[in-house]
Image 1 (spheres, rainbow, N blue to C red):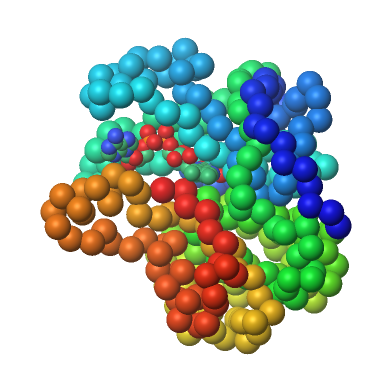
Image 2 (image 1 turned 180 degrees about the vertical axis):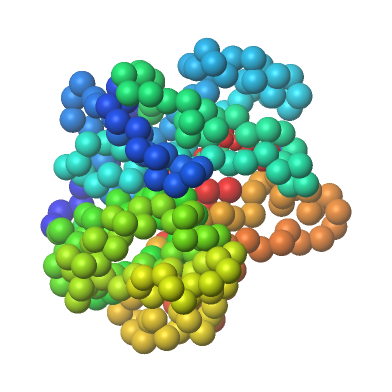
Length: 289
Ligand SMILES: Cc1cc2nc3c(=O)[nH]c(=O)nc-3n(C[C@H](O)[C@H](O)[C@H](O)COP(=O)(O)OP(=O)(O)OC[C@H]3O[C@@H](n4cnc5c(N)ncnc54)[C@H](O)[C@@H]3O)c2cc1C
């Protein structure tokens, strides 16, 4: 396969054709576009909050508080090329202890969008994609994701299962509870369709009892030992890690206090993979922080 040409992100309008509630606090928006959109699985588009009248006061208030313009937010595609363009948003909650300000765009995109609504987006872009010559580089892709981090990996997984028949996948997905798993049913269906090529393992950190849940569901956080047992073939594997990471705000706050920022999912997972012998260039990462 040849290297796809680099397409400059461009602004275009989409119309929401479907809103799918994935979990209590996440939703998929399926878009119709005037022209087909070229992109690679795993890429993202951006959405400017200023375009939404419903958010105008909130946006202006935050800009006054922060003393700067609110930036666009990035959302990965959950669709694979060839499917209708779609993104999945998980509401970022306001947690008094951790949040300096109430989150702006994600609550609106999760709960306030209806079919027929139009919005402007810019994209698609981003290097968190599979190489076109994946099968020459690896026999196995390890996806380690948490929460909405599953979104770009779901896109890549669908694409790779279709276009790279020689490559196996292991998806290790961390969530709080069973009901928080985004694309849970779709992932289980993919596993049933590709039993020899897809292994699916869920880790649940706050599920009281995992024993009655279907499939490979384990309690607690993703451990180094678990990853070791799931990846006996490190040299043949590329890892794609996506989920919460230390935010720039947390890094700055820690710096001011003269301490290091507390590692989050992304930093912890990368540490595990490095300890297992993954070289840096075989750990692809996307930070949602
Ligand atoms: C490449 C990429 C892909 C992504 N893909 C997805 C995806 O597929 N799905 C998804 O749900 N999300 C995704 N995200 C995250 C998404 O872009 C947003 O960050 C998320 O939706 C939160 O946006 P928000 O406007 O709701 O919250 P924000 O208003 O951005 O607030 C988020 C948090 O930051 C804090 N904060 C904001 N501004 C400041 C400040 N000035 N000082 C201190 N703290 C501050 C807030 O208190 C809050 O806790 C992605 C991010 C990236 C970078």
